[in-house]
Length: 263
Image 1 (cartoon, helix red, strand yellow):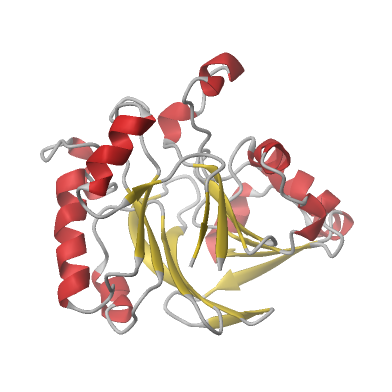
Image 2 (cartoon, rainbow, N blue to C red):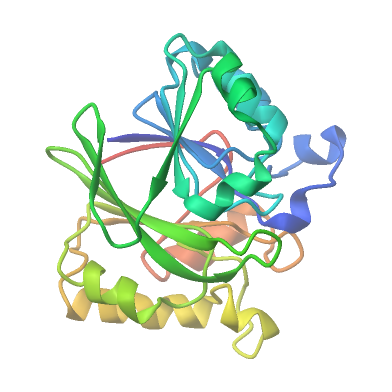
């Protein structure tokens, strides 16, 4: 598998100017997997795809975690759908579709096909890819949807996509612990603040350290697994170089916009 990170920031990056972005800035979380699968469709993610040389006509699928405004942009959804040569298949929690604000005629016009997922149920999405949506410890009051984290499998690789969410839900862990991952993207919103109020919905560095220990103990990861810190808050982390050094001590990669990783 190959990942291109379009955005790696938490919600407090939403309102930065283009000038601020040019100086070690981040857009909010989105990525492209294997050149054709979107992981979330954040504001400016279409612009970012063009910036980093991705081909928007190749996008076939969107795997959506939830519809908070830092992960979901209706404008960017339509941009990707309208540029795709095949139309766009959207995989998400059934209640997430309330945020799309598109009727059946509009979905047809933009060639968007929505596929509601049942949590914990593996689903083949075509192209040799299987996904399993896991309930995330993250609340979406506007639509009442269940925020999802994902196990994404191909014939030879396995990825965990874990933005957003704090810790792990019991049901999610019950499924995850039976897998060994080649790469894991983990919510790393908060820095080294063990008592931060976001503990219920986002991870701190001390929380990540405990998670890593549990993953190793239960063979969920190996020494070769790429551990990736993503969804980094603007006000809770230092600059990129220092952030990379901090996460390197945990054995993690601090993702940045435009970064590519293969596993």
